[in-house]
Image: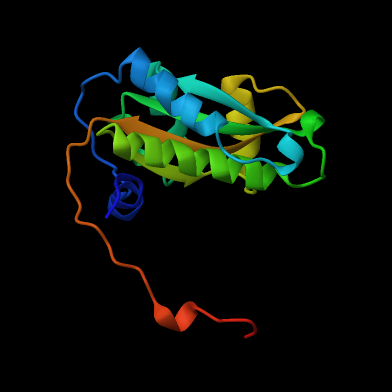
Length: 170
């Protein structure tokens, strides 16, 4: 099996981290991977907020119930969609999803652990992230990805299901 396929198939959501910082080189590589994602009309509607301040990371679980791992994570990346750069209305969501997935795969390939937590389309979460991170009006926080050196190991999960495949028609 080639390296890329192995990275994809071995990626798991990691929610426990050591206290070791993520290097600036790794952060840049994660963001490079995110920005290499496909985007509708090549609009590249994404923007990123790298969060490393402990007081900000600790505040997020107060309003987003699925982000408790941020209390341990040394950093997170908030993936946002810049609505003003859309070529095709509404496709910023797909752009940001592709960028988020690329971050997860890059983290796996770098030996880091990561987990994607959704923000959009929950209006309350969107508003609270915008307020906390001072995100401009025409930018929508889409996801937050906790990143760190893993303090847990999870085996690969084989999710292949032949019954979900249809050829030529349903």
